[in-house]
Length: 441
Image (cartoon, rainbow, N blue to C red):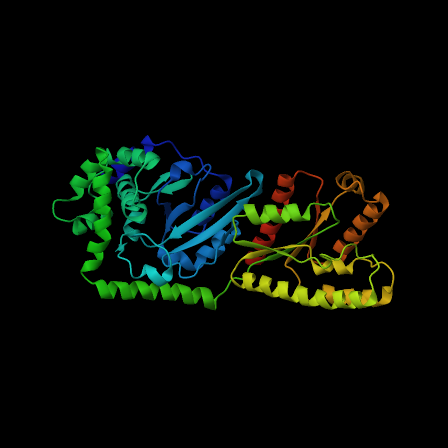
């Protein structure tokens, strides 16, 4: 009877529309035999406004990274993340980044940093397997049993978020209309309720929208859950946090480095800024130009000034490269606006032989980037953007960069004759493809 009632209630909600990227990920989980379900928010899966919360079987964690990577979701590095992992995916046709927040334990309570989380009271449960055993299928999505959905969303709002407004209030009242106290989460609440409260009163309060009373209850539940064994539970929480921290430190996932090169006027700086500001990944941008502040490389310079400028270039590149390596070590993506590879372009007179030797050293004196995007723009378009430049020189520069792209094994040429947004989407897709390929290799 319970299963029949759950199916009937689930049918009252429309089958959720699901974003194409999520369709692939959910299908991959099913195909791999991973038991999973949505914790909440299935109505917004067509265009997720925030992260997508999933509950998975703890016994399948070892294969989760590989399965999701094959469907273009990569795990984000996190220090001491505890009982959850964050995965991110990118869908170029819709220019959408989507995050999956994957949990294998059901816990409630505000979180901040591993160093302080263990000190805070928390409501930790052992009901994950029970919730997964009662899940229901709606279209392409596994969702919680309606009873479990009510209690999970209520505890999320009154314990985790400590606010109930708008859409969440409407959804809670909708679920409360048919909810009962049969959920394993209701049993947890029953054990922790202060005098005067029980699951039935909680249901009545939700049906009548008495959110202030429920928020006051939510503030008490974590403390009551911890009060019986305050030291043991906090030590266990600290152990879980330190274990996650150690795993992140001992098994680092270095970030990708991306170099943007191309003729002046191709849009390198605009693209660098766009990638840094719009990507869903932790990103840092670093200027790696060799000639900054020195004017045109063909300008005549006094010998002493030329020697001083030449001596500064590798030091400047090494310093910036060290900063980049630090960020990559923290799992961040580094975008280079220009790169010492520019030194591999044909030099101008004088001292051609010396320049080729020194410039070759400059180009190879820093670690190579993971991927090089060469922005290609027809000379006539570049001239429209920079009318003060000589069209012949612009055409020569374009040919030189295309020749350089053929020499660099990690280089890809991108047509830069498009709007900044179109160029950013194309570059993001190339970068994301490289990241997924590296992970699934």
